[in-house]
Length: 450
Image (cartoon, rainbow, N blue to C red; front, side, top):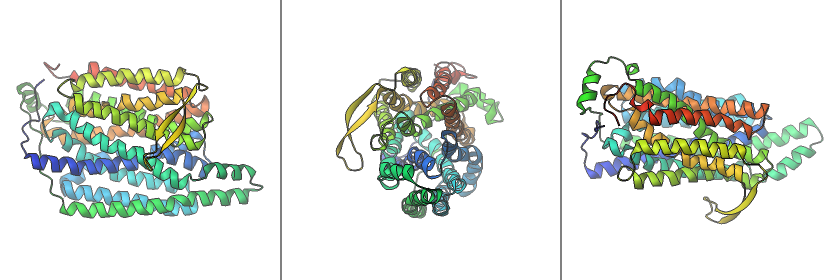
């Protein structure tokens, strides 16, 4: 396979500058996205929900990608890259502000509305920056660039739940005891109201930050890059096609990405609740999402070191898909009673803590390692040979993030029907679909592709 995006020639200074700015936005994506790991158990208690109902947090957040990705592409065509990113930041600020009346009324519907609006802003941002970082330099090193972005994203994802947990879940064990001892419904409701209002301050702070970032984009100068097809085979095929839907390797990629995002969200957003469900106190469980993010950071770092010099991005995708199946089976089959302690560094205080960690939970955290290079490797494979269709294709791939809405919701339903450990069976077929794409699907409709 020859390179079809290596004709972008920008100076090294512009390249580093662009990587830095886009890295900042990937940090924002991670900070906002992985707050859901704390919001799920928090809202489950504050709004008195079942596991299935609690996972509407991920449904509302990620469904916005499905509904907003194509409109976001149209917005970007009209507004341009910078103004579009500003609008995305301002939408996120609006979504964060909705948390104020939601907390005051302890209204789950309003919380979900705020999450949907925030997700819509992220959809606009991601529709812009994911194709941009993919085609910013040579195609064969695209996974390396996305891995760099992933480190920024997952580092934010590692610290965000700890920051929010330190505010909204402070003394959660004491609150649980008070709720259990509440003599009447009025006392219980007053305690839950007090708990719900803890999110107001952090979300006000976030809304101010998003507003300022949107204004900052006015002063940012990012170089323009365009996808250009230089491979004769793909150029010939491109000239005969009139729709983005005529590229089988892209459409299969969208399907595979849908299931991948579902298991990525499961690995990060269910692990705290899973720990709680098998008897782990919140003092330890609140760190579990950070362990998943740490696994992803390790994987991204390996990607930066190994791709493309020692490891092709297609091979990395195959390895990660296989590991996903193995770690999923470990999470399902290892008894929940197998527990050990480990020393972990709290990323908000940088102080060591003793962490209680069941082996089955460790396997869920290791899904972060398995997931790490799937997104970076799938984007360049799916966008190969798209040329003028690249922006629309990018919007379709962003729509696939809706897998994060539906697959975790199915996990929650299975957890209610069976238990939280057996529900991880949903991950196995998802990784098998990714494995199909990694070995065969990425070549569909293309000639002489290896």
